[in-house]
Image (cartoon, rainbow, N blue to C red; front, side, top):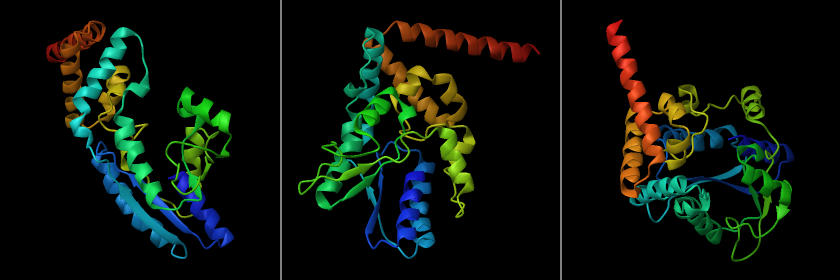
Length: 253
């Protein structure tokens, strides 16, 4: 959102006559609130920046996430059990995120790609951005074009999450925020990603819609049974026992 606003503000102030593509990559593993919000914002951008040549596009993967979610939870659980965590083994990212973007860039001539990723989101992103600098020309796997290379710009690479929220709150156009943030979510990316169900269950349980959390928990438990995982089963067993004690305590009161 912030990267898009910065781009549009810059084009508007410079009066640069360029087509600006705003691309939403619908992974088919999105919160319904996010999909509705982004589609609404497509029109908001066109209304608020009426003088710019804005083209909005929603991309989709050829294989929906629903076909691979069982296996992705299984892969994540196995990595946890073996103590050999490697996020690149979660191939869902390539299928539902990178492949649709590659197809988009093959179909359109792109001179500049503006990305909203930040260095403090993960160690991997920090190191990648530090190595390339905020502006670079390279063979980034999502922006390689059959015709040319695009210059990738990451204006938020040294921003904190507080910097992001402060920018949005002070922006003169008062852009609406994704309603999921009001529910307590700090990340509104993939809905049934196995990573938070393994490492941040308590946090997402408080913030996720009940049906979504139950579906993720069901996928996690099936992956545990399928893999014979012991460590996670032990942790989940403790969580369930703690819940039962809490229920009994409330009834006694």
